Amino acid sequence: MDIYTICKSLNLNGELKSYDVITAGNINTTYHVTTKKGKTNYEYLLQKINKNVFKDPVNVMKNIVNVSDYIDAKSATTDLKFLKFNVTDNGEPYLIDESGNFWRAREYLDCITFNSTNDLQIIEETGAAFGEFQALLDGFDASTLYESIPNFHNTKKRIDNLEKAIAYSISSRKNNCFEEIGYILANKVIANKLCDMLEDGELPLRVTHNDTKCNNVIFNKKTLKALAVIDLDTIMSGLTAYDFGDGARSICSTTEEDEVDLTKVAFDLDKFKYYTKGYLSHLKDKLTENEIKTLGLGVYIMTLELASRFLEDYLNGDIYFKTTSIDHNLVRTRCQIALCKDIWRKMDEINEIILEYSK
Image 1 (cartoon, rainbow, N blue to C red):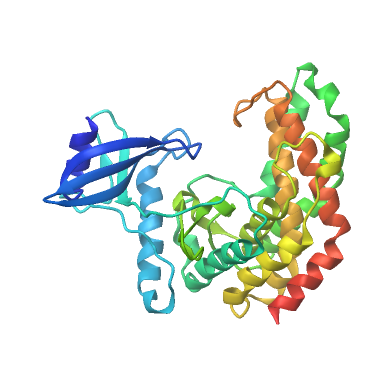
Image 2: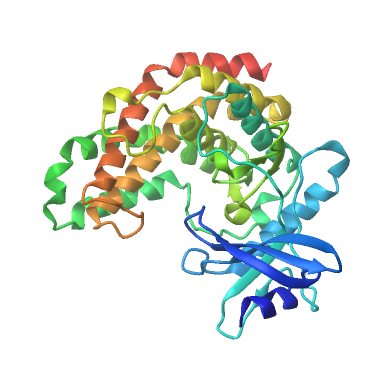
């Protein structure tokens, strides 16, 4: 099925005028589509979902629709946009073509995103957008959501997977990473803490975004105010500390995830202060005492979890993450461990900042 027919079947307004591939993003294939009706142009974001990553895209879309509908009922209380997908004549917000490919389309917004930034106001806006997103979903029964990527932030499972990779790896790579293996396994009890608390009923299950990077918030080009939280494919049940911690890990690091010079790797407390201020501005009254107490721990655990994932992939021969060199995943592992160590050194200050903005 060609793009013209796909656009027609998804009821895009007008006739197809042009389309371009959007190269940002590592999972789905995305197009910027322009249509024309009379003298008016319309712009859409058209995506072909990667079914190797999302095994059941129909249920992924059900998650997105159910969450968006829930937020719609609260639309008067937020300036954030929650973008609706076009529907087919059958009323479905997706199209499955004759080859089994899965397509969806929504309005294209003229906006700006940031992969990283040193602008503290943008960092605060990012935190506020993610915090408001979760606050708007307070009361949603998270257990009803389909698990789009099973055990995505199950740190116990992640560490178990690493231990299996260590046990079964027959490559010489294991000889290069004894120190990294030792650090992660020495902190296994800490890594499992959030999972243990969830199992013991000490933390509530919530709707979580699960990919709270800065570039998953889009901004108004002129005002630099957050327009929307995007990339909702990983919406699942989880813990507040997952979203908060992973966002802080990515936004507040002083380097990229594959920095070779570990002396440059640090956790920026100024960035963290603004991120936390924004995040808790909408959410602090919704969280339990235990949730607030574990937010700082979430920053450390999410960083250690990513280090574990990188190291597991390195031992397994680089089968998951894209790499540009034979040691790329080992470099990433070392970088995240260096970040872990700095986060742990600063944990008292991290918790003080959280306490300040949770009042």
